[in-house]
Length: 141
Figure 1: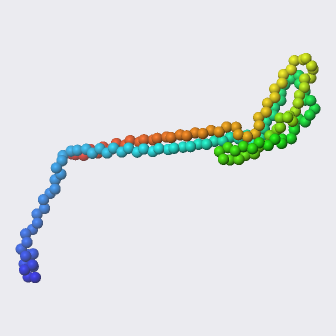
Figure 2 (figure 1 turned 135 degrees about the horizontal axis):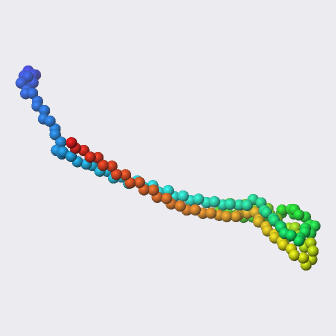
């Protein structure tokens, strides 16, 4: 133990040497690319839930049958696995019209738009977004 203590007393002081970088100037560049892809599927199904019957004209008159027949015609539909049932106007029971004066000028328009599927819209869209980032660090005196 005395030998170790004596050795510690005799030890020389340590000298530090400064560390000096080996470069004077420089630069570092980092490039980053980020890509995002968005895939969308949009399905839109539009239905008419009732019916529309229109009659217009001049030189005509209603023949006396009901102006508002019962809506009893049943339609069944399956669209994309969804079953639907609609009640519409039986066209055989629609109101009838006659000319007010035989041989005279007249105009008559009749239209019917029934219930049920009106339109199906399919939209498949893919959006790709790319972001590029470049960062440069310059160092030196």
